Length: 150
Image 1: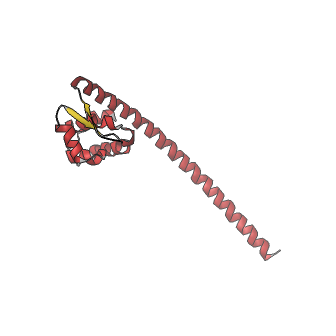
Image 2: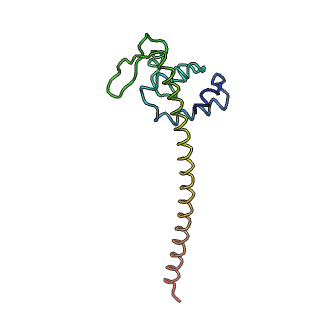
Image 3: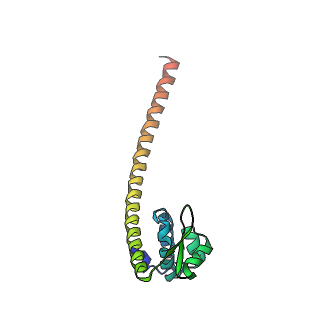
């Protein structure tokens, strides 16, 4: 995902690559911690995403996105229990964004591997199901033949 975040022109909303990137981000959202979201919001905004699109994709209220992007020196981080101010520093922010992008790339690779395994398991399960249904049909036929007699 790191390469897509850097190389995808998200300003062209009709662009298939941008839609694909947004879908990938949306699928991997559960792996993004709440304290990482302000940095991700900033990175997406720098790449041309609108406040509304960021809010919808990250499932964060629009007003929080606006606060993170145009607020005072302190940004706010959503936590499950309460919202507390979290200072954002310039130098650490860039490093944190790069760490987040690297983590997202690792998660995307992991997701692709899990998706591949799931597809294989579904195919194997379908084969087992077909064999089971064939066996059931054969048993039904044997029972029906036994009821009719010799």
